[in-house]
Length: 79
Image (cartoon, rainbow, N blue to C red; front, top):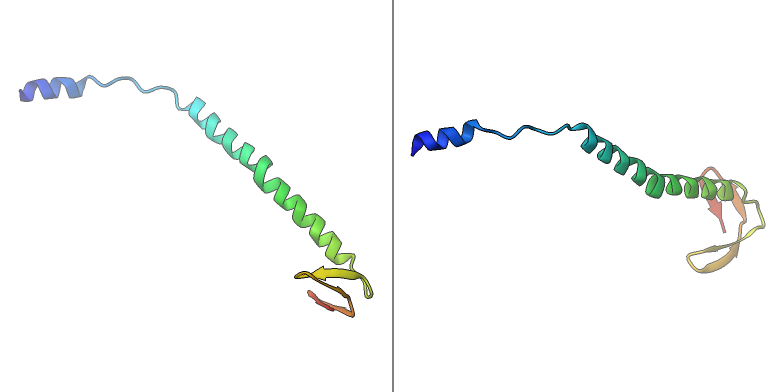
């Protein structure tokens, strides 16, 4: 019985080439980049441009309240 177990363990199946599975994983990361990360970066860039373009007197909506900008400082907007 023990000799049968050793005989079965000795005959292992050959391993396949790992390269195709690596291509699939790399493809998944590329797909994730184009579907999730890149659009988020584009939206953040547009938001930054919009915030940088704000001027004193512009009407904005903050938390559902409409107001006018009274002063602008570094990273701070007064309504």
